[in-house]
Every structure is written in C-alpha cells, then in structure tokens.
Length: 123
Image (tube, one colour):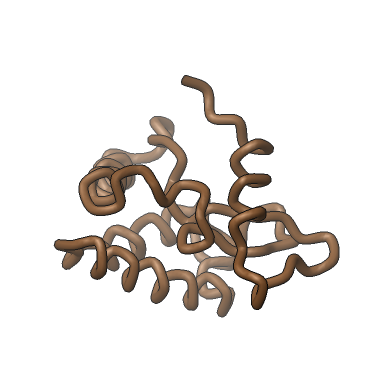
C-alpha cells in the first residue's frame, strides 16, 4: 500500500477541533512515522518499529488521521519530526505506553515538544 501524503494530511487537517483552526498557509503533519525509513541507522529503524508496534497495539491504527496524531505547521521539515532526534524522543516517550490512555498522553506530551520547536535544529 502506498501512503498518499496529501490525502492523509487533508484527512488529518479535517479532524482538527474547532478550537484549533488552520493558520494561514499551514498544512497538517503527523506525529506517528508513516513508515519505516530504511535508510536510517539500525537504532533508528528499531525505534521506529517499536513506535509503530505501540501505535498498532494501543491505538489500533485509528489515530492515523485524527487530531491527536497531528499538528499544524508551515515548516517543510514538519518541525523536525523527520529527524533522528525526534524518533529517539518519540521512542522514549512511548517506552512506558501500556494502554490507549497512556498512548494518547504520550502523544500530547510529544506534540507540546514539537510545537515548542524542540526538534527543529536537532539531527
């Protein structure tokens, strides 16, 4: 199956609650890695697998295009969420996830860090 970035960003954006309107020029970006980035080092690949396993187990794939899994941005790098440092931080945030509730809490916390530009300059 091919991941249609535009389609999924549109669905994600449509799920934003009324109190989170789209800023001018912004697009929706996902927190969950959409697939394994095989060109990364082994540690990052394993981290991505752990993250995706937790999403599949506790969020059952239903969160892909919902507001809990996204944020608005005008930054083409998605505020650094495609960098290794972000994958490492998301893996650490999901380490203690053992339920849907803890998964959603981890997403909320990592979103705050994303929106605070914590991953923009990290590699």
